[in-house]
Length: 274
Image (cartoon, rainbow, N blue to C red; front, side, top):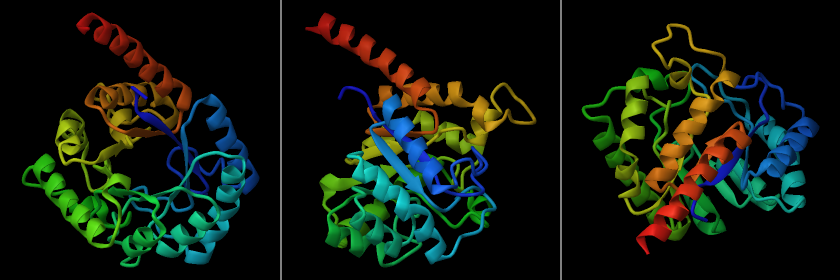
């Protein structure tokens, strides 16, 4: 493809910042995932743990109960599924249920068994930049230079992933917008996506509906999450221009339209160059 892949978000949580638990019921989550696929999502990212600032973790069995029926049903429909988890046990069970991708927001730091597991299973692995769980991460949003520091810390996760046997062709990096980042940090990272592509691995970006987009125009009170899809689509366009591998979004049609604009313009640009 000449555009980034679109990863549609399937939250199976009661406390998601973006939808407030709308898809918490497994049947509703499966129906939502299938709707996202019909709308054009290339990958469905199923998660059973909220990672918003201030969130508290569910127990392991609770997380498994949330995600496994959804992963199994979506993968059984022939759809490409990602499991969004920081737990190796959940990742292993999801892979057995048909997940092809492990999307770990901790980059292997939350569970020392995660990287060896993925190395053994041969799944695609998304390692995000992370400095702590939701109840403490914003206290750690301190950087000398956010782009340089995040790149350095991401390189450390790359080395750990490769040492654990993860195929470099199956490794994806995510700069972690909103995770131990202020709004200013997020904008700086978006302005320098080339720095992450320059690390030599595919890049995933997840800006969708995050609070810094809700404060555009200097708003003191952010607009509601569902009113941030146009801004999210704009970030997806920036990602396409930077050559990222995939964007993770809640609303597929708006992002897909933005990416199709980029694709159409790129086709004419390439033709003119030839």
